[in-house]
Every structure is written in structure tokens, then in C-alpha cells.
Length: 302
Length: 285
Image (cartoon, rainbow over all chains, first blue to last red; front, side, top):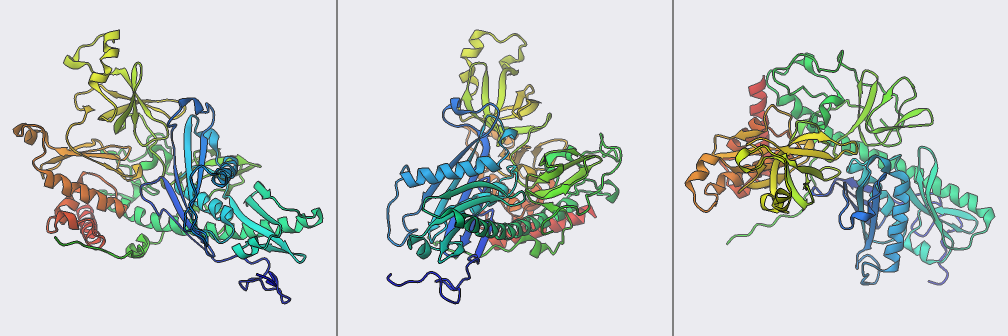
């Protein structure tokens, strides 16, 4: 469109946002019961779905198994109805492969793969509607899905795109802003430590401006982290609420003195479970005294 | 024939329905658990820059000096003595590979399997060649965990008459964290079916053997009982209730007034599970 200004004189963008403002983000975890982990995210009009299977035994060629690490396999797919014009995208095409490779690099940096030697983790991402920032939405959805699957990660991976118009850095670009042709940068960040998992840009940007654009993207990624953190806690609280009540109810002759937490009984007891051994010896063999819960010493929204 | 269609409806969060407030200490990856270096780090944590940081999203548990974070949903982690139900995926040279919903496929060694007739001898080359005659790809077995390897892979054995290949029945796959640890995992329910609650989340429902003698051809006559049990288990799992013989039985009895196919409808599922919960609370307190 001729004469479309991406940033007005008052500092408003095409959709009414400010320069550093993110689009509305809504996310849900655990959307599929049959997968190990799944998540759905909407960033403005960009919608992405991520599904994680694993860790599991390597299927197909046994030779690909790494003896000391897990293999991370990412696949990206874009629905035919995701863009303005319906376009059939075959699975092995260049853009999908490149995106899959970028996702793999991002998640290999974040997932603690040394804990699962000889196994494979599959991450499948599908974009249902693409309105700019598809890489960022994919990474955010995949992070939630990996968390849902219980796979250990160093930290969240939060991603956001950024651009540069009229001397101002813009965060979270929409399709209109991307199509305008200015420089765009995609950043995937590990917020707690500030480490960059992936930084990608394929346009020309003067090095003087790089610092500002990078800072805008990093700040936006940290804002995304705040939102995702809230989503995870809410999801956990929902599930935990149901789980806890049931464990207290199902045990005949439940004695509060026997309520304890311990890793010894593995994951078949939730927190605060009663030992299922009958007859209960009155203490957990291997523990000297009932352990206490840890007081609040963690950072983040509690 | 009538057909029923439903529009999608937002799920009600469980805590709303139960009205329970939880005070568990929830952490997400990247959260610092403690800066005190006196603690040992357990599962779900890693050490970074003098701090103990969580690596999964879950609740922090502390046992004396050991801190670990337990994720709500993980794959099955084998422990010695667990009963598991698994499916054969591969027949290798002296062992079978069994899929048990864990991080790596489990292993069933030829030497850990009982020979027909109960003879005790060294397995020979003929036994190796006859392996496929015992168990093929796709067969379901029940077994016990003998040992756990260092990388987490589990070694199984079927050195008892109660373990072995499973015949006619229905398999239900649930999350391993919902199967309660009990003294025995083989239950004969009074309704005419038996159930094996595998610790790995695989639940096998089959007709009780006495009933099976009467039929010829191996077809299940009381398929209704088995279908009803299956739907009851699925409804318990959807409401995140622990699975054990009493809860399954109570749920079965609570579902009797309804038709089998209605049990999976959300409102009826809630009603049945609510009644089950009530009965369990009454029985306990």
C-alpha cells in the first residue's frame, strides 16, 4: 500500500500499539491428552500449536542414536489456510526445513539432553494462522509443550521479533510490518540468565542500530516470559488442585501423622501423599524424620 | 438411528469444581530454588552459578538435605518390583524389546522368561530360534521389573505363572502418576472381569479366567462388563482420580444406572465420579 506509515507522528503503529508493545498473548497447555506435552498459543492473530512426544526410544535408524545425549527432532508445518492466499506447502520444502532446523538449534540449547542418552524427543509445530512473528510463536508454543511433557530444560525459551522504522525499534512485528520490507530480527532468549538461544536476521541494518533493536527484542522476550510463567502456574495449580484432594480421600484410615513427602515413593504419589504400604510402618524407611516443605525462596511470580 | 452432536465447550478447571486451594511451592524452569550450597540436588534441578535452579515445572520436595522437583507428568520411570504391562516392539538376538511408556524401551531377556513346562536349563541356540514362537511383535505381556540400567532402561522378567502373554481383553493407557502403588496389582473384580493395573500406566481388563473356560474360540461373552469398566477407568482418569481396585469398583457401581455409551459424556462422567468420590470419603472417614 502506498503511503502506509508504520509509525505515526504520535508514536502509534498500524494496529494502534506503541513501539515496544506486544500483541495480546493467550496460551493453553495440555490441549491434547494423547501426546506427552502440547500447547496452543495466540500472539495477536498468529496462532501456533505445538506437540511434544518423548523422550522415547529412537524409531527408525538405530544408528542415529547419540550415546550421551537425546536427539531433538523438530518439524515445522504451516497450514494451507494460514496465510492470506491459500497455498499448499509440501512437507519437505525449504522454508519448513529451515524453520525446523532453527527450532532444533534453539531447543538443543535449552533442553538438558544429557539426562536422556539414546532417546529421542520430537517437537512438532503447526502454524494455523500466520500474521507475523511465526518463529516467535512457534518457539513460545514449543516451550510450553516441552514443559507440559515434563522434559527438563535449563529455562524457558521466549522469543520475539523486532524491527526498525524511522529510528525507532519496534517489538513484535505483525505481517503488515514485516511485509513493508524493513530489517527484522528474531530473538530467542533464556530469560533468567539473559543468554541468547538464537538470533536471526537477514536484512541490512546499520551496526549502530543493532544494540537498540536487540534490546527491544530482549525486553519483549522478557515480557513474554512473564506471561508464559503465569500460564504455567495457573495450569499447574488447576491440575494440582484436583490431584491433591483425591489422594487424601482415597486412603482408608489416613492418619495425618503419616502425611509426608518424599522422592522415595516415586511419582505414583503426588505431593502430600500417604504411603500406600500396608501395614504402614509409621515412617518411611530410609527417612529419619518427616521432611518439611521448602519455604518460599524462589524468584518469579509465586 | 439417532446421532448426537455436541458443540465445543470450555473445560471447567478442576480446582473450581473442588474448591481446593493448594499451597504447594510451584516452580518453573529457570526459577532459583535456593542459594544455600548445603543441599544435594535431586531430579528436576541443576546447578548453575552457585544456585540450585529448577529444570521442570512442578512442586519442590525436600527430604532432609535432598531437594528435588517433581514434574506432574512424566513418562514411566521404572523401579525394581513394579508390575508393568508392555507391548513387544522387537525380537532381537537373545531378548525382546518391550514398549512400556518409558524413556527407553524395556528389555525382556530370554533367560528371564520361563520355558514351557517349567524346566530350568541354560537357553540354547534352538531356544533363540524359537523366540518368535513365544512372543512376537505386537504381543502384550505382563511382567515385573527386575533391574534398572544406569541410563534408565528397565529389565523385565516373567519368572512367575501370573506373568506372561496376555490374551483377550482391553488395554487402557493412562498417565503413570495416576496408578496407586499397592501390594498387588492383579485384581479380580466381583463384576466378572479382572484387571491388571500396570505401574507404567497400561491397564489391562480381561474376563476372569473361570468364566473364560466356558467359552470356546476365545471370544469374550461379558464384553459389556469390560466396556463399562473401560469407560469408568477413562472417566476416573479424566477427573484425575487415582486408580486402584476400590475406586474402579465404586465407579463401576455408580455407573450402572447409565448406559455404557453415556458414561463418556462430560456431565454424566462428572456425576459418576462425584458419587465415587463421595463413597470413598465415606468409607475412609
